[in-house]
Length: 535
Image 1 (cartoon, one colour):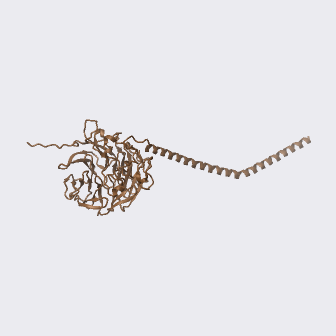
Image 2 (image 1 turned 120 degrees about the vertical axis):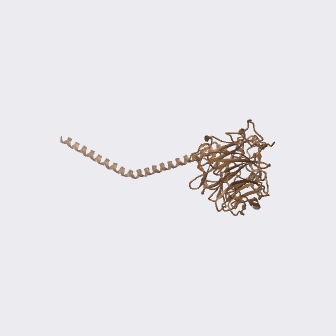
Image 3 (image 1 turned 90 degrees about the horizontal axis):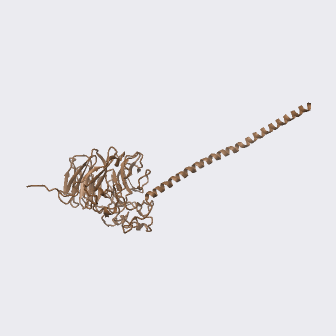
């Protein structure tokens, strides 16, 4: 008797559910650029979407609680002179975002807590090197302020954003770079190129370690490192059928798995959840999201299910696990842009009856703290990203993650590391504040006590922003009143001047009138006296 054994998996019954329209974001003019990008970036604080903008490129940044219909005149981040092609939130600072544009410039922005109250045009730093449009920006997973950019000039550059300096320059690609991805600790870099090849580099030395044919089709390909070292790719074959493959870094020419999916034209974006080892395939122009689980057992990439919608998707973003609602067993959350201007929120959930924290579904996930500094990384030090338990360090507010540390704004000065977030009571020097912890994890940058105590009693960024807005309004009123007083004083001076010029003439006229009246009175009295004498 033959029988089929069902594969055991915690995620075999994961299902997707779209939130109601009033819990989504509407009236968003998503970019119509033909560039193969997700057009969206999400973190636990903000949702950023590249939008259509006249007179240059822009993207909109929305706090997660600003749902519903978005006003047409909502403030934007609009400092680029050309359309924005790619955006990425810094994994170690939820208020910092990088953007690449057709104007060949990469800009790094500081977004205040609560979102924008006016259009932002001044970035924290401009990264100028590329000679053609920049279509890819990527942050290092564990090193603070390390940013990778790739442009249509076939150049790949790794920056220290804190100082604005170039750390590594990779110029060995013969054509446009389609995608790039660091491995788990950031010690390797995989790229895909228009010449149909996949390459692995040492990102510190720019040394090419291996290369191989990726997919035979001429359309765009994507490649990502999985947590345990394997490489997952998506692309097309010669018949324009979409494929995915799984490869080992030391045998790129021999895929472990190569599977054809369908014949659609849209480029597939693999979105990877390292905690659950699940991969979500989202094609541009598709109305479905397919999700798979990668395991050590054949066939290694296991199809789970498909989330189906009625509208094709123009862009998509995946929320980090810190932003998922653990009380509902939510293992992934997508923000999906439709062509009709709706950003649809989709929750991927594991069905569980218990309301308790499910430790098997939520292993330690990526924290918002950097493991090493940019200087340590370029000097050869490797470190796995810092992880933490969602059970210990999150609070659920409106179904999302709230950081236990108060946000610190970026300093304006460019001396040293301009992306450091020093605490107000810190007496350490710039070098000390850039210590091995970096970001929110550095001892001088962390608002929590070293024993994990409560946050220090400091004024929140929102309160500071409110005070600054009030001061700005008062200054505007003072300037307006000063201008009004000056105008009134000028009118009064002019009136006084005109009055002083007219005073002598009026005085002469009054004197002549007085003399005439006096002579008339004398004449009248004389006439009266004469008539009396005659009588």
